[in-house]
Length: 399
Image (tube, rainbow, N blue to C red; front, side):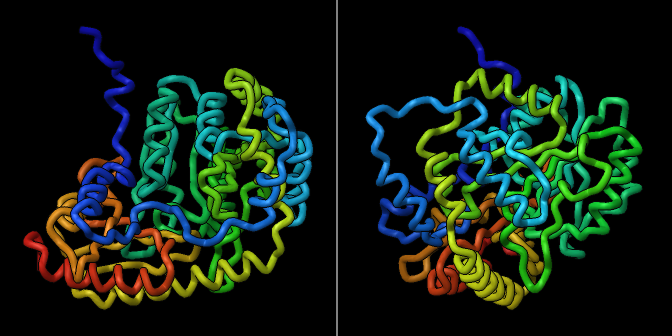
């Protein structure tokens, strides 16, 4: 009997989705499940984007240019310019979500066996994308005790070998909500120049920086234009995850022309996704002001509520809409499954994402969970009450 590939065997399960069968079973049994496991916001998609889809009047849904509609790319270039990021539409390529943008970047810049350094915990699918590209992840572990701050640059230098080709960061971070300072990015810049590396930055959450903090893009690092590659997406910015449209941004012409060859192999990004994405560029600015206020309220409720639970540690995120919480449990995977199989509070239970899947280092983060604060205040309040009782009654509680 034929066997699957080694690459396929190495592909990790998603910590975000692997418990779905247990959640489905819980729902069939009559339980209400609060989904804090996945970054699917309940924020309304901008009306202007939905309207553009409804008003599509062509008789044929055609392929677009492999790099995406020129009008959309030009619109995106104006969006970046409004943020103080000087790019032209030739520096942009539309992709099928941010995921494809990262896959194109990995395949265009790294060969099989090359290494990429990523601060962990990191977005779990980075592991899968790296395996798919034949790239080895070299993790550098951050600590929940200091809010997952960037480790000293000397620690990065220790990991660099002849096979190291890139560093990948997510800013603001998924799953930690950490927001990189300009000083930290400048330190990374010096390291990247010293060792002639690429710097990949996943900046899909740039609109969501809180408490007066500002997002600083790697595209604004002077002297690093040929080294920086930004991964972006409409999914979280406009709360339309199912549109599956993102982009890759770089001033490195060789990188972009190489990415285009991969883009041509899949023909074109989604037509309706591009229509919605281009229309969403006209979203009023007060939309983001309202969304930020909502996320700050949710974050504050979540962090304050979790830190009141004895033995729980949850740093306050500075951006995005995720938090990592360390729980007084023996194993977060077991706890997450127990929540769905054996626990409920008046018919309610909670689905969380075990954080071990966001680490590449084995046996790390085993008592941590990632929580996405993407539910309304009432639902989030109920979910926190569920977690409070669940932690107190869980058979594997450690204190």
